[in-house]
Length: 103
Image 1: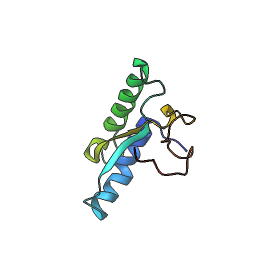
Image 2: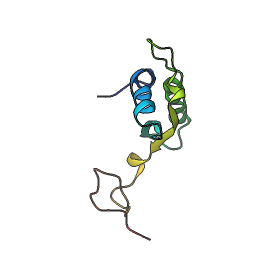
Image 3: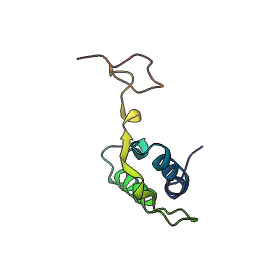
């Protein structure tokens, strides 16, 4: 199951954020947590990420008008699909069950 940016933000603003703030006030939430970009050199990929983060942060909870930005501590992203799994000693799951090798 996947969320659009606005759906992720609405869920954070209306459900997850308030529950975590009430029950676990020290816990931090990082939004997006998806690929950095499919092609690190393509400006359209960076624009997609920024647009998605903006959608998440600006989403509101219909029942309370709270914004997701009130509950987000940062943005998480990763590069798993950009790893050369054939020639690199380090890969993200599910490509490798081995821990990264120390250089």
